[in-house]
Length: 445
Image (cartoon, rainbow, N blue to C red):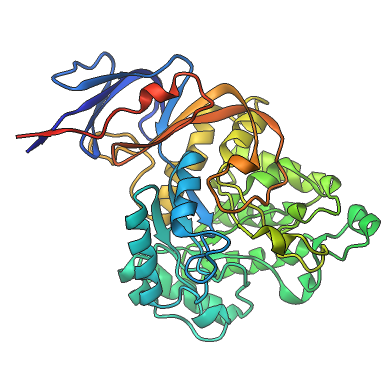
């Protein structure tokens, strides 16, 4: 059996891994990239013209999401989360283990992998728990989780308070080429804090937590990474002191990487209001912290942008601020926020933005992707940088609506998402995007 090829013609391709930033064609054969070059011959392939102004990128990877299944399907399922991912331009997402039950056992991991396969949309990479039940006491069977499909370990949502347990986690994870992804929070210093410690917290009558509640743990984990040689990845970094610790570790050759979320490089505690869609952990920090995150994105100190997509049911958020759960959704807003606030404001080049969303997450997680080199998976994110969109939570594919960005108008959109050579999403808001929806490859004898 042979499969008809598809040739993407005339698109502006940005592939940092290959040093490509210009108009070239891409040939897709089945689920793989076959060739990249100028004026590629069709050779029996189906020509697909990329509309002017669109940018063809290696598929974006969100290395920090919460899909809630098993156990909290009223918030999100793997299928609805994967649908939200592709609508947001992500070909893959790594889901954290704070499900019910916790993903601390191969049975849970295998169920997540199975459900993701049934959805047939974004790739879903499970993250296993560091400790049984994420209780911070006894380590999980790291090797078994790895063999079942986990690409990293984390107790996300729960800091690994014990330095000894973190040391052992780094040692064991390094044996299997996995990072330890840590929610850096010193529990006693952060206890009871629901927003950043500062004037806005006082004005609202809400208890704050200082940036040092995060940075103290970052300092510890950078040191432990240096001690063990294991890779520590700092999740959803928000404080300027944390960035200093990461930079110091990198300068010393320590295996530390980090991510930042769009809400932490867009919003500050000055944006706070008595609205639980502004309640997240870590909290929105001061303007100086936000500015430090922007500097880190620009100078290469920060390795990735991740959403920390945290869906909650509306009833759970419709309570007093202190009682509401932490977290906002982000899969369907992240790319537009990044284009509008980073690229169009000259904070980052398009090439640097792609690095943060594609090759760097792939490298940190040790998964396929991040490039359009011949032989690689045919995973693409196609951007419409100049299309203005209005965020409308009621149109989200996610089951949740907990976002502070509802109603925002942003310059920049996702035009299409392609996974394994299949067009899994085209945007109704981007002119010409529908023309990218080529049929599923036809097979002939």
